[in-house]
Length: 176
Ligand SMILES: [Zn+2]
Image 1 (cartoon, protein in one colour):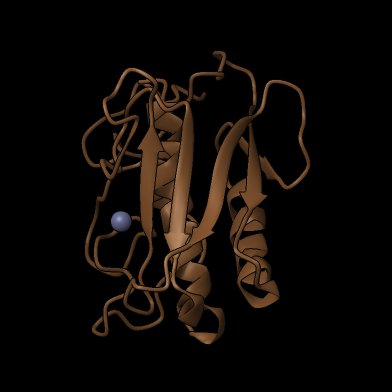
Image 2 (cartoon, protein in one colour):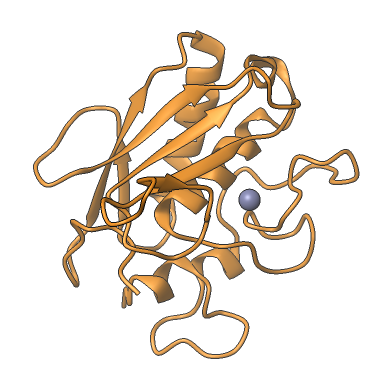
């Protein structure tokens, strides 16, 4: 699976975050998530500045979402409508992440950004609740101290990927 339309085998995946949230505190939390994903193993390098052959993740607000949630729409020109909340590996042309304003001063605000960026990169939910970054219900009340960066299962094994590691970022991009 190659989830981003611009990605070329064995080259870095350059992702540009486009901030349309109009809130400095939200932007600051998103920047920690950006740095954490860039520091993790895998092809992804995330930046705010445009670079050649980049692929876009828009960061937007939906203040109707319950705090501390978020949602990611992955967008593919072949889909009608073009964007859907599929949060899974697919041919992604661009992504839109929505968070409510209240995430700005919530303890899980950074975790939500990191989790949603994982969806935008093509990752689905996996692993035990609250342990991997990509566990479902990360923002739920029962999830104490969720991770703010990709964990081992989110990174996955080196390809070829075996049981329990096949959903990691290295596996879906065949990054070895
Ligand atoms: Zn999720």
